[in-house]
Image (cartoon, rainbow, N blue to C red; front, side, top):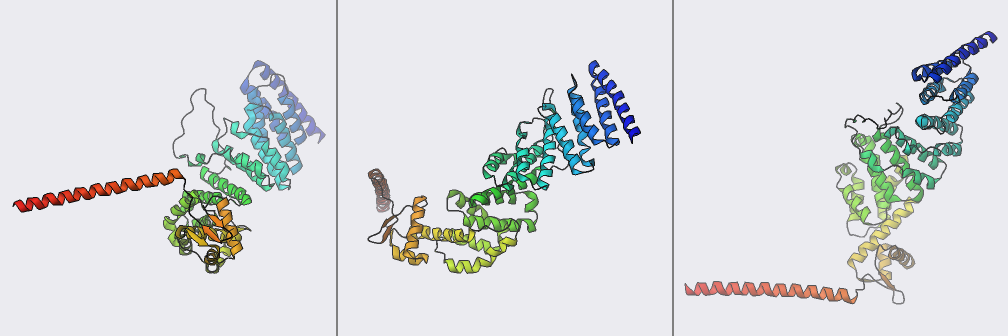
Amino acid sequence: MEGKSGNLEAAIDQLLNVEKQMRFAGDVAGTKKAVTDILQLCFEAKDWKSLNEQIVNLSKKRGQLKQAVTAMVQQAMQYIDETPDLETRIELIKTLNSVSAGKIYVEIERARLIKKLAKIKEEQGLIAEAADLMQEVAVETFGAMAKTEKIAFILEQVRLCLDRQDYVRAQILSRKISPRVFDADTSKEKKKPKEGDNVVEEPPADIPSLLELKRIYYELMIRYYLHNNDYLEICRCYKAIYEIPSIRENPSQWTPILRKICWYLILAPHDPMQSSLLSSTLEDKNLSEIPNFRLLLKQLVTMEVIQWTSLWNSYKDEFENEKNMLGGSLGDKAADDLRERIIEHNILVVSRYYSRITLKRLAELLCLTVQEAEKHLSEMVVSKALVAKIDRPMGIVCFQVAKDSNEILNSWAVNLEKLLDLVEKSCHQIHKETMVHKAVLKV
């Protein structure tokens, strides 16, 4: 064993002399070969301690060439998976990390090393440490890193923040990715870089495609929005996943997603964006494959009062089944929110057909007590979803909007304009008939 160790040290010393001569001579190819040969000797001898020492020593040599350091880091990264145990692997990654820290020419390698170290920490259950490690690297500033690798790295940062329930930082990190990047046409041929341009490296083989990254991005955003119960944004995320060509072609994949879109559309509060999404979803031909949901959406579009008890009895089983579908359950509050949305829909329907109504009659139509009806109505007025006034002593709700003097005058002016226009048309018709009659008499 001592003989082998002596032989290794002698061989390394010989190569170190060669490396020194090449370095001072400015021979890039020769220096790169010398440093990689030194690492290869240590690796073949399975002397991991010596390998770490040589990496640090070679990187600190006076006037060490950038190309040599890059070659050395890239060579040592291939040995990470060959390490005998976890402790040795972590030690090697930390050594390479310290060597590459602060060096722009090996920033991509450093990012990949940190990603590997974070994965090890996560497997050990140290999610907070893994997330902190990943946040040290700002890959969006790396010009030479492939776009898909950048996106995959940021998505990993977001995922770890969500796992440690740091929702604020997860949102900040997610904003580094523009959703428009997923709509880029990947079929176009890549342009050859001009002289002086940064050469973009090819992403590693384990990096998913752009469309797969799109799905991962929206799944992470769904996790974030579920925390806030932001149903409309969750619906938009599922809509984006639904538009992915590979999912649209496979009924077993798009059916559960379309069901989720329908549920979250119903759970979302009434506003212009929700109405627009509701209309576009109803026009989808695939919705005819799940007629129950088509009927449910039709009920929401139709300006008629929906009976909550009959609706819940019809769709309770469907609602419970979502737990077993792709994407998990609809959330703890979903059943209560569904009832809220149906009540809101019913109030909007009543406001469309009545200008004034008693609170008692409104409560009967909504199948609620007077106190509950007043509470829901007040909440809708506060959120500006509806304009209404309640006369509590009289127990009357007025849905009419109070017009100011300018609006009243404008409406009168429009009415007068219409009246004069009708008078003019009538006079013209009378004159025409008189002329025709005179012409007939002359004949």
